[in-house]
Image (cartoon, rainbow, N blue to C red):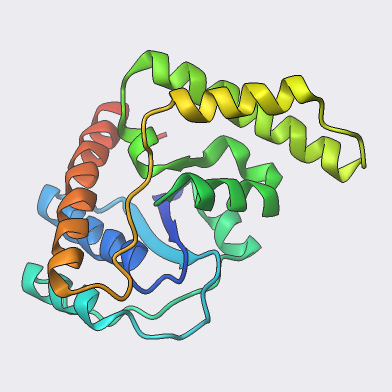
Length: 199
């Protein structure tokens, strides 16, 4: 039986960026009439049940999203639930892949996933496979070569910045800036999902 397309947004504490992404994405899907998609969010270092930051809640309310979202720690159940896991930064992506290597093919940063530049995509794919290989080596207590370290550093330098900065602790203006950046990526995401159709 085919289920709805399930998207999971991931950040650090699941109180700022990923709940804003979840709320805005739900509004966008409603607006576009895409009712066959489900959206959730989680944090790699979240405490279950923590309320969303006040500034993030304010911004979502202004956009018409009134639901109260509470933080969820990233866990295996959520990882298995999701068809697509979109992280706010490369570190979140790395952390998710380290914890759940079986999910490597469905984890990307939000910016990386919606970016259609093929050259960057090739480097990202190489980076992902190198990271997976290094994780495996570490798990098997095998040494990482200097060449592998050097290649990883080169790829990190050459790749465009895939991170959405954390507004945590900043003024509401910083949250607005962050929300604008996320929303821009979400519009691209919706376009991409519409083009790709439902799997």
